[in-house]
Length: 239
Image 1 (cartoon, rainbow, N blue to C red):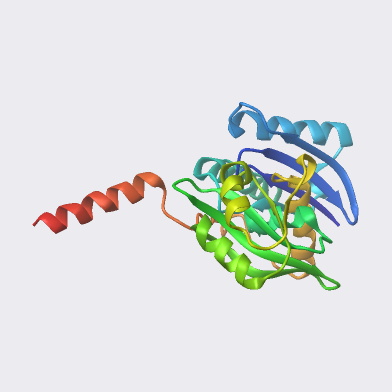
Image 2: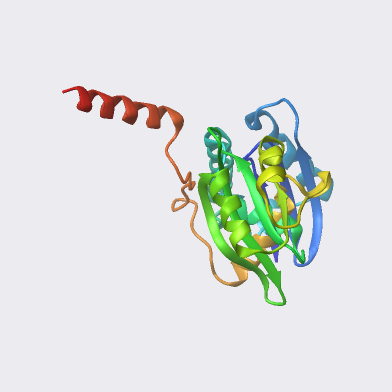
């Protein structure tokens, strides 16, 4: 079983190929370029290096949100285009779940943090058992204070990862009342390999969709939409 994984939901863009329990290739870039410049060239490179016939793929897994609105659209458009052209199913992986999967086997509770701006974070809570990854709190958009309160209430050691860590680290260190740690550089950002590996599980469970069905899950409105609604409410209040 062969799964292509794509992730352009955050600051990092990546492409990976997983075949059964083997990671055949992974290409990750976290540098000053837009994902529209990097995602397809990365895919082309791993296809070339592994001599992959894309028609042999069983499915295409993509980080389906939340995350950067532009990044999600680029990843989704790429996955949908491939799915339609190759007539392959898509597997939509919740972005925060995929991020948590980087730390498979962690003894501590896992808390991914993605910077959602305005002191908010895309986050969730996870643990790993003999049955695999368990979702304690599904991915959501909340204030950093809210997730730290819940972590304190659960009273368990926790490990944080994601691009939200540098943004919120001082707040975490001041307010987290349980033992906490932070994932190292090689596993603290999105990885397409985790999307592909988790996609393998989804595929085995029959959790797939057609390319036409796929839609990113933004979790909240874009900033422009939020500002428009705020202006409309302000206008109604003055009437």
